[in-house]
Image (cartoon, rainbow, N blue to C red):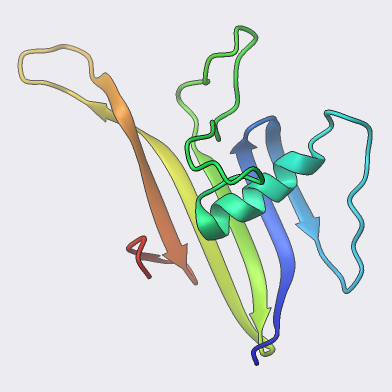
Length: 129
């Protein structure tokens, strides 16, 4: 059986977290008051690995929200996990980006959705890998 350890989790613009890096040891505790980001850290970890949050939802909002509860445009959401798999390093990364398309004859690009990019050890891979 393989031994997999999470050594570091780096989070950027994920839900209410602007930027956070957590270094893990054999016994790392994450605690704090309500609404301070504990569940968001767990959600970021689950989103990186499985594309879902802690409630099993794949359609949850990963982007930070503005004061009106709307997703903030112009930023990328990124979660990077540094693992040890049988003492060999492995880095998984997931980036959620906005897709802007400039139609012919239009002056400005139009927001047309999002793309999700996956990386293993810094190299792009398809979602299936």
